[in-house]
Length: 540
Ligand SMILES: C[C@@H](O)[C@H](NC(=O)OP(=O)(O)OC[C@H]1O[C@@H](n2cnc3c(N)ncnc32)[C@H](O)[C@@H]1O)C(=O)O
Ligand SMILES: Nc1ncnc2c1ncn2[C@@H]1O[C@H](COP(=O)(O)OP(=O)(O)OP(=O)(O)O)[C@@H](O)[C@H]1O
Ligand SMILES: [Fe+2]
Image (cartoon, rainbow, N blue to C red; front, side, top):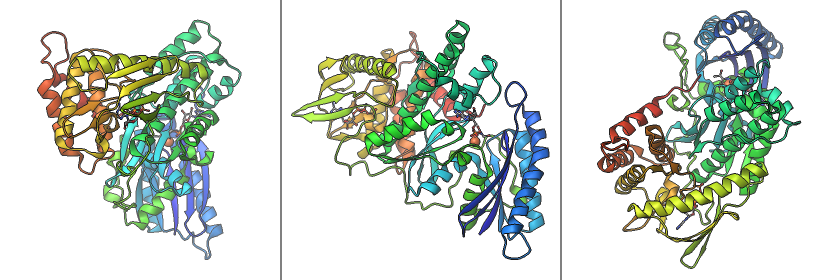
């Protein structure tokens, strides 16, 4: 099968030919490079209008040259349907429709983000990896489960590339900023910046303001660039590791333009090596926006009969990856491995060993992180975990008794609790209890920070919360809603039937959360905010 792909969601006007018989991908691209500032939607659309016909024509010439007969021998036309900039997408859509009609072949509408991850999965040969998408307008962790790609974690504000590009605009560098930050960082010393992860979600707004401020205050720009890379990429590596731990998977693939950064790839590969996981990053021409990935996924969709009638082929600027019905994969495949099957405990942050009825948790140094950042995080989290585990128990939430703490070494000795993780023993009643426990914790003025199904231990009588290392004191509705969101994502990404579990979880939360009389967030506010968090389109 031979399929043409067309891409043009933002900056790359690109066309490609993928031949399934030879596995060859021919790509022709023409980037839009703004003279100053960031990507301007109108200018970008003008660029698409000029460049798309030219790149398509080059690819058609190539198709004729490589065909056995005189015609280009094309079986389908795939195009990026979204997400992306509306004016650009419409031009791509029009070009794809007219090409499909001219050639009299089917039209295939591809989700750009799913294409970013499928290219790595296709090339690696991995079955069901966790996928880290690090692109300009997005940043998320995805895993296939029950017929869809589930968002296991994502940015709460801007995409990772856009965050970096905003900083470089601030210091007067031209777009794109990512490669310039990478070069400058090589000559810089590490500069400390805010590090924000919440379970498998993360946010860049605090770090970006701090980076701009540091540069305004006279910190050498190379040092800020070094701090930015070390902080942002350590955050992405940490959440990727947490996703591997939660799902029990030992395969990770990288996608997206920021994936071209050597330091990010180094950190991910080191993390995977150390936990015995396999890591795959496609070559740069398949990481940045390109039509090759659209053609490759388009071919699989076409083979599965997943084609679009012209009348139903409108573009979708907010097309989320979890909206895509995955027609080209087997329902049985899942990113989640059987959580009861594994023998040894592999947390994301720590090693855990069982000694009699005690558990020794060691936050071992993570060599992928800058030593100063690593030291700070391990100490802070060990202290937070010891303090909040005990405070939660005083509030009536079952947690393990703490027997010893050594923040300098990052070691805590706990009482061993529960018979298994909730991940392997999910019931509606237990989820209801987790909801109640989180409400109690929130009413006491703090959040858990990482309430996934692996951070809940259960036995016949009790449901315990463990691993408060990412917890902190806060009365903000947004922080409370994020705690609920983290639990929700961990259930969605791994459970066979998440709906009743999540309903019970929210009922439990609502039954206990204080009604807001004296300063605590009213539960309706938290649940309403949760709906907002879930519905946010984050393609800015
Ligand atoms: C929706 C779509 O239009 C969008 N595309 C996109 O963001 O282009 P992509 O090629 O995946 O990524 C571009 C980003 O990748 C960054 N980038 C490129 N090279 C980099 C490097 N060496 N280090 C860090 N960032 C880099 C750029 O600064 C820019 O922000 C997306 O995939 O989110
Ligand atoms: N007190 C305890 N009693 C029984 N089992 C425990 C206890 N503490 C930890 N475990 C087991 O060890 C696993 C890892 O512990 P924990 O979640 O604290 O580590 P972590 O590295 O912070 O994990 P992650 O960051 O992936 O959530 C837990 O999922 C649980 O199975
Ligand atoms: Fe992209």
